[in-house]
Length: 270
Image (cartoon, rainbow, N blue to C red; front, top):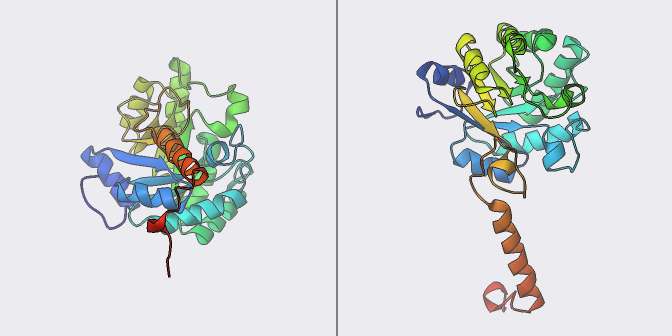
């Protein structure tokens, strides 16, 4: 956002949409990367349940627990000085209904210092969103490809293709907004469908593989930074940090084995 804010708050997100200014979001799972992204001017940091895939070595996000999320979210929220910090509610922590969702969200907010939580689903999650909003907890929705439902969806597939599916997604987006969500992530949605949703809902839309017309964009940071050999089609690699880190580690190993590190400059003589 061009308007500088001491901290990004809910009303800044809405104001950015009203002004037509693009919002930026990246995932973060620790204090080191959170501080770097915060200094870079990223508006929103998502402590995503993608921590399961990227940091814990799981094939999906399904094994991630609330206990996994809390230390990561506490670290990110503690490091961020400006960014709006959002924490995913992991699979199994809110689907039972508003009571379970509220208990989980309250626990996360109290334990981490985060600014908001995120949960997946449209109409099926509207009651949970309303319960959290009524309790004073900002909620970010998540529609399109929802990773926690990947077994039902048949894997990571584009959602909202065809007139009927597009209409269903639009209806879900309206339900999420009407329930009080402060923003909604649209993942792997055809660009025209995402553009239509962005037009019909008053809250900001944050796209990931959803075209150019969303109010903001989010990427998983390891994809954005080129940490691995593969990244999704929709994720532009803005750097090759993985290669740089590998080169640094290789140089360290070589110098230690060659006895050139540590040298006098990196030793205490008295």
